[in-house]
Length: 476
Image (cartoon, one colour):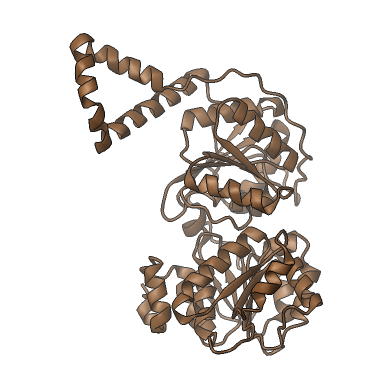
């Protein structure tokens, strides 16, 4: 196993990396950092959660000169959230070398960003639209740019940013070093890479190890008008510490959030129509554990770096296999176990079969949780909370009160009453039917249905999309 010491990092970067808690590089970091330090163009195939930001952030900070007043590196990201998160991590990596990074994104006053640009950041991290805006206003100059990173390139192309990216790159020096990171490597990504990269080295991690190895994948067949009731049952049965519920449209996100709140769940929604301040507030509450359920659309969830998510519930099946892998990758991170449950209508079973075949993953069929399952789940959650509270030292303040109660009442009766009080009775507030989401369009010619236990013993290693290239492919 490679260590950070073997990567020949400067004292300033090593100090920052150590302070960030990095003990040894992840596979994508161990493979990427040496190549970037050698000045090579690199294509990295890696999922969110593999440490790819540090994979390009560490060599970027190493190669930037704090004495220069020009922009030396630019990272292009698909969303505002990802731009902020990447800039924050780059600032932590470069803090002792005095390498500053500035996020540039829509939804924030451009005059504020122009003022911040006058402080001469070495690295800018931005969304395509806002970067183009600054270029046209001539508030950023890229003539001294040395490095460009396209982060989550597949998502940017899916969101229609191809022309914007090409326009931005046209304003940069042709001598720049280029890095591209993508969870998938479809033909459009390969074509984009050919158009602006110079003999790139290709590195890829094993998605089975970094994405889904720790995730238990299940599906439940339901009618559309059953979805909200089944979702509530899942929340009661599993009592997740932190769960993301994915819905297909912004309107359904709002409706689901309102319905869950009416039944007493601590839920917040996030989608593209919300203001940036509201999105930030929702994410802050979710990360602190103030809200337990985050309801999101695919677009709003892109780039969200959230740890501690124990469950993902797909209220609506995603449109494609890549989105499915991205969604379930929100859980099961950093070696923790996770569970992903997808609600599928009878008409969508064929589409689930396509996803299962495309991802080579086993998705196990489960029945709709029964009322008895719900009662058991709620009681188990109450018992777990009681045992957790009993292990806390701050319970000593209640010891004398407990002793007094035991003098007058039977211990079993008291404990049963405590569990009854702590068990949240399932709210029976009637739920309105959700607005119908746009129908799923099955891709390709797949005509089957989801297979049971069909992927046992099969490798999840993706097909090599670069066999026609002469570049060396690095794998872990």
